[in-house]
Length: 210
Image (cartoon, rainbow, N blue to C red; front, side):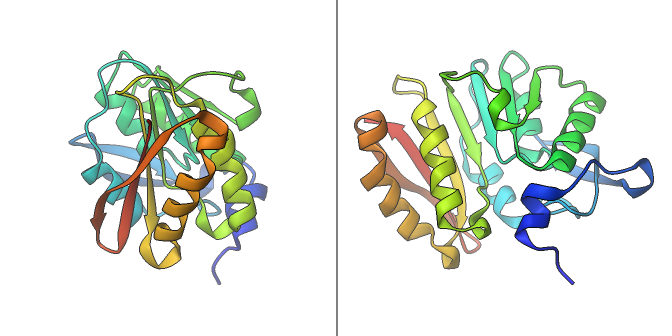
């Protein structure tokens, strides 16, 4: 039986060593070994949506402050860290098991530029030059919208800063795009929300300051 969204995102404790799964995955153009475990999102590897984001989003800039919102075991954060060693990458999640796995993976890959934490541990007002997220759509609109209205307004000023969100088409990517375009200007001033890519049943939405 599949785990519930609450199991995935709110209640899992760190995995014991006996629960760890070792996987070879492709991140930042290289094959690396990571650990995952049950009780988190996509424990069997890089999920389809995340893979679409990794394939379609532009290469991260060489430096800056980046955010992986809803990091899971870390495929997006690790890719940003491996691609941009001079950047600081914040990997944020509410699932303690996912955070522990992301820490383990960052350490094993030598990504000492990754800061893994629960949301409240990120300093208020931290601006992000790049935000990547495969947001947890299945937790419901209220939680999802609350999360996005907290974090997307932290996008740094300037034409080169951007957020990329990957959302499955049949789970409301187009309605989310409309909602973002309607809601964010009241929180962060003029924004441009575009469909940057569409692949394999997923949309990549791009948010920039107008």
